[in-house]
Length: 191
Image (cartoon, helix red, strand yellow):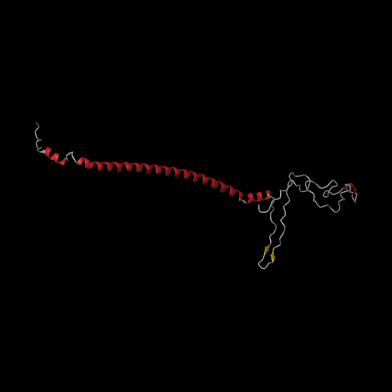
């Protein structure tokens, strides 16, 4: 039969006292190990979710920065357009295209209702003719010394040819009369 186990002596006895036996204490460790594994697993999953949320936020941030850059560029381009159209020369050119003319002398109303200044109607300055003519332009008003429009130029009262500044019998000079093609179209006020 078997012999009872001999008691350990010396170093082996000391090691045996330090090492617990493998009996009922193993069952007490299982919930602790399970808790530690669950905590570590939960921590890793939480870190993974946090990392993916941060990456998603980073992608969204870079997309918003790109959109901001594009919108800033567009805003600057529009501001350049506004600045170029707000220059006095550009405003004058567009006003002339719309048929506007420079204003006359202004008049102001005093608080007592009297008018200060001499108001004048705004008139369009004479537009340059599209093709310069070698002869001097004639005045649209007839010369009192000139013959009537129905009589020939040689049948004047003095018998001499008509002066060069008078209106000829063939009609007014087409270069002196304003043409409808050169006048800008009428526009509604406020537009």
